[in-house]
View (cartoon, rainbow, N blue to C red):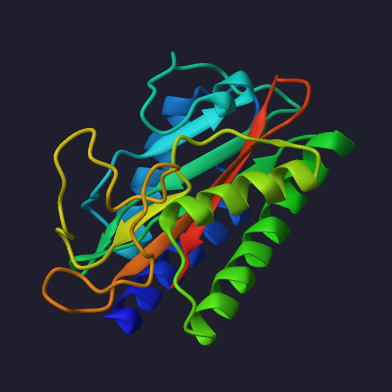
Length: 225
């Protein structure tokens, strides 16, 4: 399973590189226009036509909103952070990639987008150390670590969750409001525990760091293990 998930992720990372090469994120475009352009690119160049969760493009103050919110469609400004959260299906395997991009040369915004990626890898290493030592680790402890790392870098963690299960579509499903398969602050599930049928679970780690000004945020997510 992990090889299929990694292959799906690799394809989407290549697509994100193309988004930058083609300069699809530009000032004055609506978020919805960028979303449309990415959808077209995904289909025409990468054969991606189906998604397991809604596609998100958020700019400026809309970057403050977590996944479940649906803020009004706005135009991108010249110095905005823009983040993209894409959950396509690649041969029935779920990918989930989130990246933040900075328009302009605002040093604080550039620093935030660099830092959130560094923090993601720092947390991944922390999780891997626990796994290699066969130390159990609850989802709520992972969430707490994400909060702590954000604070250590001078930011606030803005996500209701810090990750979730991923797999062959559809992965294990839950009713609305049940966070037992999410990296959630109340979830005591061991993140290394197998699925209900005894298979290894695979998780996405997602970070949402809010700047101290409260005016913008950055987002980064990808496959944890």
